[in-house]
Length: 446
Image (cartoon, rainbow, N blue to C red; front, side, top):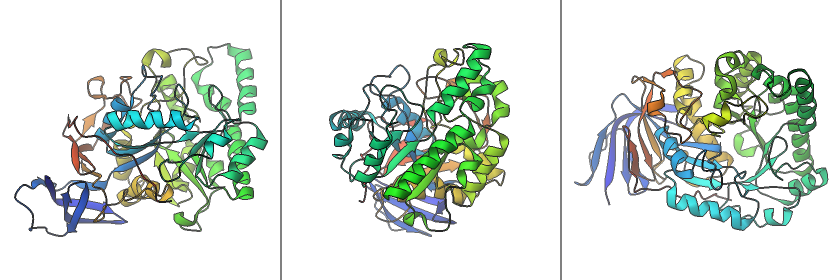
């Protein structure tokens, strides 16, 4: 068993930054100390002087497209990009092909990940209008959550039967994660725009079609149902300022029954970026106004919003270049999410300690993930080293996503992820991957 000693790192953990050494033994963190001098001869030493050392990022919402949509992405390609971006654990969504709406289909995805994933993994069980029996078979210790699409889904994954919704909310003790946009509002808005423009609707109308009203109407309804039934609810990718007032910062995260997430793109882009980026920043929910972006930042910083995620959802370039009504929503983000947010740290928008809280500690708490999300003795050694003075420019030749593009293309970030450890193994080292090491299935302390 080869050990690793990380020396002189600026460790960011649990609200503090301090210079220290971290000893990794096997899969776990053995020791954290100001100075570690007692270690075995076969220990590999990494001098991390002037580098940040943070816990591995836990991304609670990704779409890695496998099975069935592998022209866009695979678990192997996207998890590889994720670890290059400092993401060591991901939770993937059920809207693949076939959709993960039975226990058998859900386990098929776990089998793929066990063979191919560079990062640690879990998957959400998908809800429909008619699979309550399957949902209730879900093991809370081995599966992250139940995912419900309350707007914007394909196939039969849009759950719009109110009686079914109440049964799901009343019946499961699992966390229920929801995509909230009111489909009727969106359809009416889309019909109005199509009557003027046909299919070639200007992309700037996207936040008008997928409006703040559509988001609030759906999320407020889900929150009311959670309050009525006592369900554990997590609202994905908030995109509007008005929605943030529905969440509280009056109690600790561990005591919250209703929590919220914001995604990187809603913190970085706003509707002024549509002219340059076009459909490459077409997401559901839509990127909205500067006022909405600032409202999201405010709620993130005052703890009404609990976690930051990516909603990584790649499509091919040809798909994204189509006219508005045919161009799919979503974009790739896992490789560059941390770098983008480190720009916010550099610009004093958020502290590095708060960023680690939102991307590492809080996802672990929120999903009750065992022994991850913190740098602690006895925890899995999911660790990321970052050089904050090593700039990089996002370009075609260094993009790792299978789709081959990024909404950040042409952007120069001031920081670079230099090393990523997953379960004690150095999976990513200055551009080089260890293709023999694989991630582990996440286990939940429930």
